[in-house]
Image 1 (cartoon, rainbow, N blue to C red):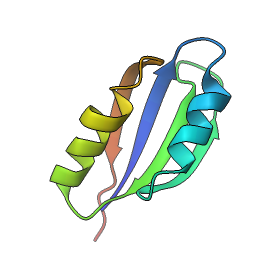
Image 2: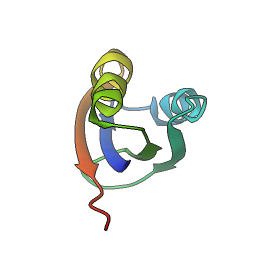
Image 3: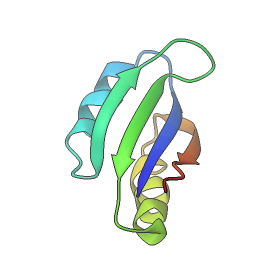
Image 4: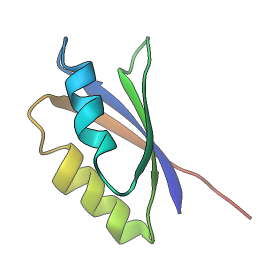
Length: 76
């Protein structure tokens, strides 16, 4: 299962959080972007429970992460 996570972080922490996220096995790509969000994180997980754990217990536990939006990719 693939998903994109849009992340808002504290100003000035984009590169730090990008480097931290790139170390996670489920993370395939992290891009710093401009606009309403700071990072786009592409992840691959086995199931929705693993995605839930990644978002709630890893990403949102970082004090620099202010907000996330998760987009699950619908594939045939």
